[in-house]
Length: 450
Ligand code: PMP
Image 1: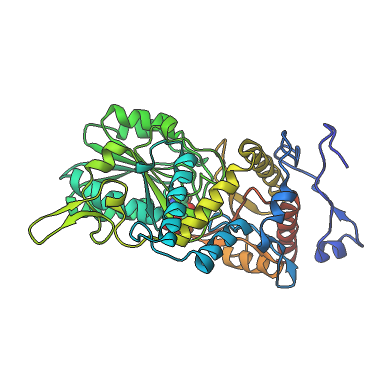
Image 2: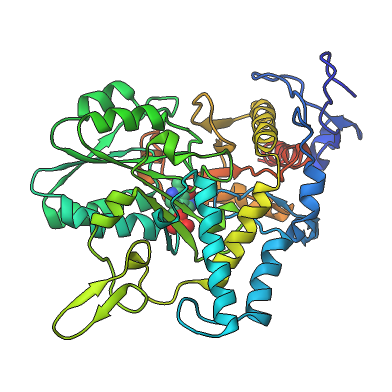
C-alpha cells in the first residue's frame, strides 16, 4: 500500500485485542488522524538497508516476555553489532595483553588495536590529531576530567559557567562541584516552551566573567539539537571555552569538532554501538597540553623520582593507569562499522522514522510529547494522561517493547516543563516502521484499557 506520493504506508498491524473487540471484530489498525505529516519513505534516498543492518545486531532477534524485542531505549544504551562483540571476545580470547609497556608480540598487537581505536575516534570527530583524543570511561568521566583539571586551573572567584537547562546531570553536577570549590557561579541557559535553548537569554548571559559554556549536542530528554557552532562562536567572542556533550549526538548524525570549533567534546562508547566503560574526550591540543594532570599513576609519566616527576605528552598524561583495552577494541570495531555505512543515508532514515513516529504518536489519545524543537533527534519523551510513566514502561515491557521512564538524569530539563518523570522512546538507525507501529499500537491499547 502506498501514500498518494507513492511512498510505502506503514505495515498494517492487527488492532490491539481490546480495540478489536470494541470495534466489533478484527480489522487492521491504521492511523485515522494525524496532526503531523503522514509517513514518507521508510527507505532513505540512497537506499539505507535497515534490514541488512539489523542482521548485524544479534539482540534484535531475541524475544522478551514472549514477544520479539522492540528496542526503543537507545538513549540509555545502544545494542552492539556482532563485529563489536567479536572484537571484544577476540581481545580476551587471543590477544590479552597490556599496552604500551611490553616488548613482546602481544603487547605490540594490543597497543596497535588501542591506537587504531584512537585513530577511529579522531576520524569520527573530524580531528587529524590523535593526541587530542583522550580515553575515558564515558561522557561523565570526560566532563569530570575537564572540570577537575581545566576547571581547577582556570576558574576563580566570581567566574561564570553557563550550563544549558537541557543538560544531563553529567554536564551539570561536575560543574557544580568545581564551582563550589573555586567559588565560581553556575548560570542556567533557559529553555523555550518548544525545547529550544533561549538564544536571547544566552546572549544576555554571556559576559566578561563567562569562562565556560557547557552545552549538549542533542538533548536526551527533548531531542533538541542546539545550534552549537553558532553558540560556540559567540562564547569565543567573550574568550569562554565550550564543552559539548555529544553523548546523544554521535550515533545520530556526523559530527565535526573542527567545524563546531568546540574546545572539548565528549561521548560514551556504549551509546554508539560500542562497549560500556569506554568513552572519549576530545580537547584542542593547546588546551590539553596546558591542563595539569588529573589523576596520577602509571602510563601518564615521563620520569618519576622522589625529587621530581615529569609527565608524558598528551593524551597519555591524562590517561593514568591501565585503560579499558578490550573496550577500545570494541570501540574501534563500532566506529569502523559505522564508517562502513552510508552515514547520511542512516541519518535520513532516522529523520524519516522520527517524523513517522511523531505523526503516529499524535494519534494516541491523551499523549503529550515533551519538546518540539525543529531538527530534533528521535528521542521521544511523553506523558500518557492518567497513567504513571513507570506503569507505561511496565505495560510496554510486557509486550517486549523497551522504553525508559523516570527523570532521565536531566531533572532541570523536566522541571522546566513542570515534570518530575516521563516515558521516553528513543530511536537508533536499526529501528523500523514496524517498531514504531508496535509502540503506538501498544500505547493505544494501554489507553483503551485505562
Ligand atoms: N549526556 C547525555 C546527553 C546522556 O544521555 C548521557 C547518558 N544518558 C550522559 C551524558 C552520560 O553518559 P555516561 O553515563 O555514559 O557517562
